[in-house]
Length: 351
Image (tube, rainbow, N blue to C red; front, side):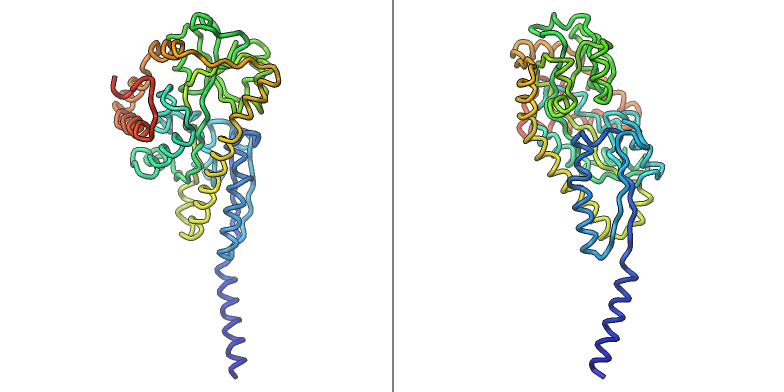
């Protein structure tokens, strides 16, 4: 009877486990292809970590990886997740400034810090702690998962040498999103662009240079068409994070949500570690391939920074008028960066 009782108990336990165990199907979306780190972190770190945690809970999970514009182009990821066409996406605030305006605070504040980890940590903390950051997600039926995409120090890559600001006069220079404001006062003609088109448009003469970062410039082979690299210390930036469809997310058990959060944490650490290890390699490899790499003089950097319009102030005041407290976000970001050790060339929030 004792043995029979134990057997019955085991059957009940197995039955309960089988009822609780579920298979989850999740579509991941990114506009960029997986050659870029913020997409590569999904198969390299996010998926394995989530899969492991789900297994520990007794669940299975299948991922449909839709990258490189398969179902959403660059800047369309948020809308795709919002509509439920994908459960999770690399939501690029840089390319969706209308819906994620406050997330773009770093791109309105160049020359603040080249420390990508500091930028990532600061923006993550703001997303977790500041309701003004969270509201942008809530308004668009998504939730912030983490894994902030911080971009290494932006540089200027051109098909001509840059020895002074005068060399930029009349030149067509492409920049992503709000970074086009960095060209104000330089004499250059700013053109909107992004990494998916830079190479071909440089090659065909659509523009003469780009504002870009080394960790993407090297795999994108931009040194072949823009071999002059000027390290001007424009700064590390925040470009987006993982987000999830809110309706789907709210329907998940708490332990399953925690599995996805663990995946986001794994992706964040993988991303920043891989980025920091790669930046030096990227510059070395581009130099080996024939690129001319120059550190901008302090005088050139100062002239560039002081000659710019204070786009941050204009941006913040515009958000203030729309009821989004841009000035408060700007001050909070700058205060946190300074507290973290950043030494901005301009205190954009205090002018």
